[in-house]
Length: 288
Image (tube, rainbow, N blue to C red; front, side, top):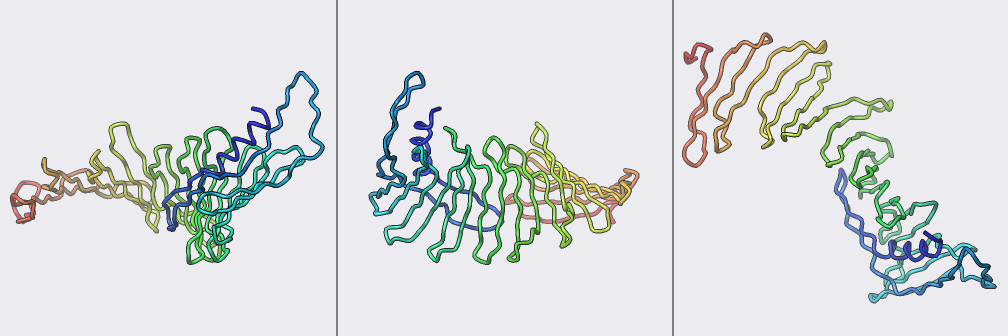
């Protein structure tokens, strides 16, 4: 793609890019309306010499229908390198810089503080590369994106700009790992998630003493089984959950570390799904 085509494409990208994402802090989606700014285009052919203009305009200004003002800045070759967007009241809302194949965007609150920063690709299909979103209490989150445009990692920071947690996601946007970050910068993984092609999932949750629990969920995201392990990975016991066709939990079975049934509970419901009774039984079927 020629520099001229890049310039035209980047103006269109910056004028129409919409940012949206939900995470550990809240913020409002921001949209940049189309601009009426004019663009100077210099056609260049590779096989013939073309006399360059004596002077290329390095700055242009345009206005949108709502009165928003746009400024565009160019280098000595006429290539777009940055710009600003102002509200109808003259308040700076967005500024951007173009470098290599990336666009760095900064979004401002009415008081001049930064609400978001973002780095996007400048290709034909614009994709997020990174984004930082600030909260009202000075906390913020740093988002890193996968090749398919979904969030691959989220790091959350406190008001002192210290990282406190990190989440990782797969290409389908499902969380696969959550870790707390200690004051010394080391990571403590709270849980990990895995998924299979049948729609079932497994959650591995870690405890402070080094022990951990593994939760199995069915394709309806109902808890099917939980197994407890000590810090050495030895099974300590497990619980199995069974449901009826309406999704009501009808039986809970508890097993010891050797997999032997210790006891079970039977739940009974009325026609509206309200729990009527819960009865505990021994392994041989006798009531407690």
